[in-house]
Length: 140
Image 1 (spheres, rainbow, N blue to C red):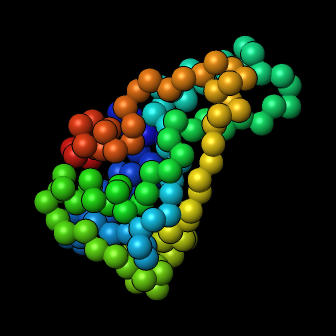
Image 2: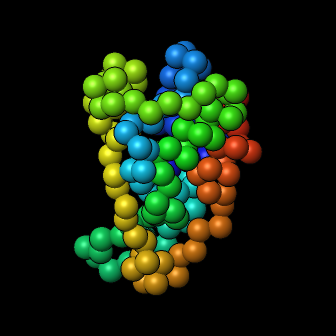
């Protein structure tokens, strides 16, 4: 999830890039992250409470395939630092913790097509990369 005043994973990546002077990704950076703007997630949560049958499994994903490399590249541009590829071993010491390095290397493509159809949900807020480039993240 992303949006104004985010205190999650993206600000941690930005802080690491500031601290180390590089914006990094693991391997080729092709691993995909699902993303949703917090305001789109809030609408989905309301729709789920109002319309979803009990026991439904829903995916609150506006974007299903944001590559980690593209995230690192936008952060690098915003901070005017280079983008670098790290091996999994290098990532374990570069990022906040070895556990976070595993998460940053995780490939997680998912689809929200069933959720969108079932609830009539259609995300309208900025994408993760747009939010990174034009939102309040550069100040994070």
